[in-house]
Amino acid sequence: MASLPSPPFVDIPGIANFRGVGQGHVGPGLIYRSADPTRGTSAGLEKMSKDLGIRTIFDLRSKPEIERLGKEWEGAAVQDPDVFQEYGITRQWVPVFAEQDYGPEQVGLRYKEYTRAGSEGFVKAYQDILQAGKDAYGTVFRHLAQEKPTPCLVHCTAGKDRTGVLVALLFMHAGAPADEIADEYALTDLGLAEKKPEFIERLLLNPALGGNREGVENMVSSKRENMLATLEMIKREFGTAEQYMRGQCGLSEKEVQRIRKNVMDGALVKM
Image 1: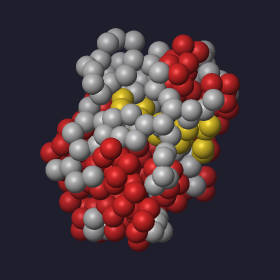
Image 2: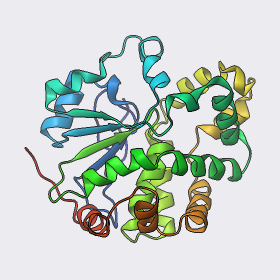
Image 3: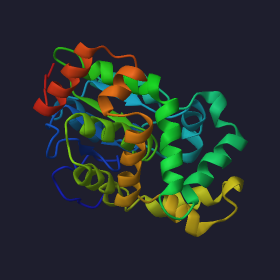
């Protein structure tokens, strides 16, 4: 794996797009994000556990994505997601989209949103994520709302969309300006640089995408303008991040305030 700018990237062998959510308004050491970590090597998982103190992994992927793991990631260092237990890490499966939402037609429609030119498709797709992911996000938020939360890793397949929307909410909640949130989101283009050709070729095999290479290349991008447009949508449709946490995820006022304190302080507790 090529070296990436640091901070916030962390070199975890076998895992792409691994970085700490710790720039500017959000404190370091509590929340990390990445692409699928089941490709991590033993040395990588050891580093996550011992050096970073990560004790919980939140997996936002759907069941079909996980079931395809063996076929798509043949030769990966980690074939069983539960192997994390050997390193003192608990994996919590918190899918944004339920299994019934990942039928071929639904996948095709969702993918096509991302392939459209401009930001409109991403905004629509991210609005769907916010609506479908309130229970999944609520679980992550409640972990962060503990008195002394332990460090955690949040991921989906690429660590870009479902993960990116959740992280954007945390930055919003911490009072970060839109430009800072968009810059953090755009770092994924660096984090996935080596994986993009692989993602593109795999996606082009999906009949729903009809061999649309230009659209697929747009789909795997992380452009600042897409996040800036998404932030406007969040304000328009959901209000503030606090309003989303309370209204959509059912968090209490006390929990919401503790999240803000914890993410800004970067509360770090090693077991």
